[in-house]
Image (cartoon, rainbow, N blue to C red; front, side, top):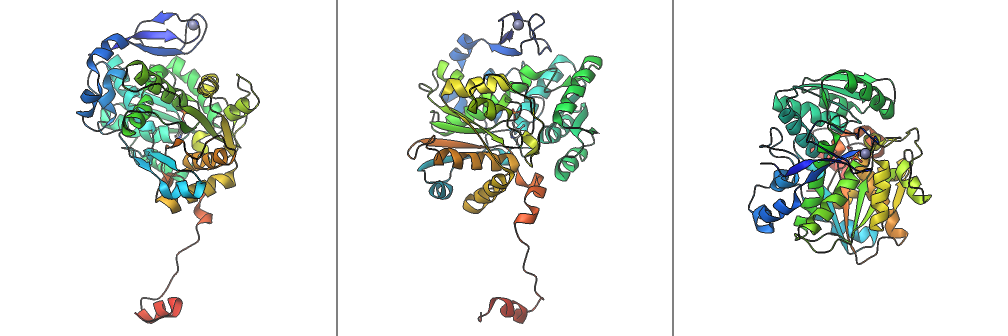
Length: 410
Ligand SMILES: *Cc1c(COP(=O)(O)O)cnc(C)c1O
Ligand SMILES: [Zn+2]
């Protein structure tokens, strides 16, 4: 049972059938999935959602699939945790972490978009998946393609973190490293996509893929007791996630599942790759592409596909954009680990450090309810902190050796 009416151009409004398309044939604007909200309103209530299993498919009427999910049955419904220790250090009262560092199966929010994209691709009849990735997408496409019994070709910048490469190869995919940055990879993939009948999850079927991210927003609203936060801080790469969280909140409002949305959406980037936050600071509504140079590789996209809409989302919500240096990113990772016992990757270090900055600037206020988006796991980007955590104390396997080092008697 599908509640999808078709696709619609975000620029000129032209409507298309439910097909594997991603740009408007007339104005080259990006396409967006359109849903039959009148019918959804009739079937989807808080009670209906609450009775369903705790995974992302509890919102399935708002996802662009026709049948049952083909892969990733356990994706989503990750913890939303109140973080009082971190709140105290940052000087606020009402702080939460949405923790996708423990999302299944590959420990990042990308499992949400990929489970949606692969299910849709299988429905369209594709037998081969592909993607251009900064790392987490590679892990997820490889894993979920194995689960779905489909082939996969994955394209990455050749210099990615070791764990992201190993965590892709292990699933037996075709992994292609490109001598270049993500934007070079993406450009090449657009050409390959035009020549091969493959479902490039974030190119060929991007409108369907992107809507998987909405579940990150739905869950936050449900987990807060059917309301939205005053502020949300979101790491930005291609700008898909940030726009879809906003779309999720607005859809819930429209469906009457929550009250009026007055959330401020804040974009977080690394200073070494900040095309979106720089545009916001300079009051521009267009992107000036940059060449990435940061340890936050998972969000290092110099020419973001949805950058324009990312800026628009932030402006419409009354939020702002900030960026942080590589040192601040490392401090952000360590701060979250030491205060809350959550080990996030570099993108999470970005959101924690940006949140700190926004609080210091007074843009996030002491009494407001703020959610920090943690989108990936620290075990995948160990290089970033390897030299910054010290080393174990080595002793001989004897009590005296321990006492020599630590003194005292047991
Ligand atoms: C991909 C990614 C993002 C940002 O995603 P976009 O939708 O491209 O903006 C954020 N965090 C992590 C860990 C990611 O892998
Ligand atoms: Zn158009």
